[in-house]
Amino acid sequence: MGVTGARVLRDTVREARRGLSGAGVLLVGHQAGEAMVPVLVGVVIDRAVDGGGIGDLVFWLAVLAVDFAVLSLSYRYGARVAAMTSVRTDQRLRLRIADRVLDPRGGAEAGRLPGALAGIAVSDAQRVAALGFALPAALAAVAALVVAAVALLRISVPLGLLILLGTPPLLFLVHLLGKPLERRSGPEQERAARAAGVAADLVTGVRVLKGIGAERAALDRYRLTSRLALGATLRATGAQAWYSGTVLAMNGLFLALVALVGGRLAAGGALSVGELVSAVGLAQFLIGPLEVFGWVNGRLAQARASAARIAAVLAEPPAVGGDGEVEPAGGALRVRGLRHGALRDGLDLDVAAGGFVGVVATADEAVVLLDCLGRETDPEHGTVEVDGVGLTARSPAAARRAVLVAGHDALLFTGSVRENVLAAAPAGTDPGPAMRAAQADEVVAGLPTGSETEVGDRGTSLSGGQRQRVALARAVAADPAVLVLHDPTTAVDAVTEARIADGLRAARRGRTTVVVTASPALLAVADRVVLVESGRVRADGTHSDLLRDDARYRELVLG
Image (cartoon, rainbow, N blue to C red; front, side, top):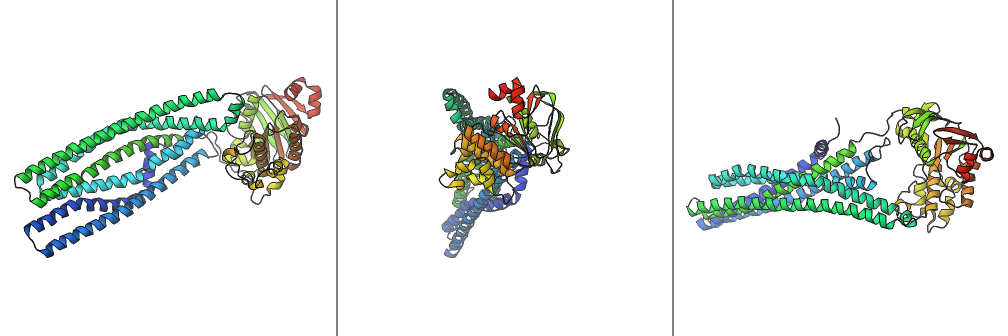
């Protein structure tokens, strides 16, 4: 069965059942104690007026004091348990979303900006987790109504019946009033997440935008998205305000009716002074539980909308399949009849285990090849094999352990340079050789605390060339059977690029390496270079031979 919003809510309640039960019992005790306060006050007044004796009066005052102590402690611990349940539920939902987003099979990010996914994992998860407080509060409100109704029935049958018969229709109307809020809550979250996603993308690419003079266009784009988000938020807020005001008015009218009936009964002598005080106190007390029902219904409406958005992420089908766990032995890469996207003619490519091969291709063909090698997608036709076993026969995680694809725009993680370099490396790896190969040792030499320097969010404290070298060191330190690099030196100068080419060749000796690039420095150290054109290998040879014999190769490499 697919993941739906209703299922997310059911799972959330089931997982938090113990906390909800504990909080519910304690909050029921609090509300029952609150309902008994006006009843006990009425008893105390009647004892005082009737002259029942000082001992009788002191006894009922002591009962009232005990009631206050019970309701106070019940609320303190009940609210604490409910809050902790809400926090734990929020954490479980965020972890569940994170697990889906980080699933090696991919797919969850389809059609969603990173900021939108972050909004779902934070804001929507919080709204669903708020049920951890709302549901025990609703149970406590029901208990308060029951206790109040029973007390009123004992005081006056007409008043008790008025509560018992009048509350269900009132709750039904409150539920109907919450429907517009639920309809508007979803678009509000969707547009807010969209605005957050656009803002995150703009912040990430701010240097590029400034470099090409596109600040105005980017700002206009964000303003438009922000206006849409603001409009959705205002509509949802308006619905919330209308809903809250209407519920308050309905509660007030209902309580006014209760007070009117109680007053007429007291005027007719059907109630004592204490009973009248109890009835009026209970009528005032009922404002709280009735308002809680309105608040809970609003939280449920928002939770249903947010649960639907969470379910949409969790239900996204995987981008790739496979469940085998075959590990590579030597790293021989074999591509046969690969047709996908820009690769239309059936690409054949062989890289011997331990080989260092350069691939020159157009931008579109390079992206498609990298996606297939990295199992970001499965090819429409053809196979990619490592040591004779197809990547599609492996699980995505096993396939990526066999073939690591490192893009030229790879992002760094928040943390130190050292932590980034060792992020995917085997335990006990010395980062030094990989950093020297990528010339990242030069980067850390100029940093305040060397390799322990924090790189900031996405590596923003480093320059483009520094980030690229640290990312390359990370890929080398991972030591995969097959390492595929895409333009790893686009942001460094020619001298540094030549040193990286030599260092990379030395560091990967005996390990299979494929470099998709048009860099002469990297291609010069390759065992062989293949030129891909129109989806197939057009030329195959050493860099020097192709420069001499192939005009198209010279055009792509030398510009």
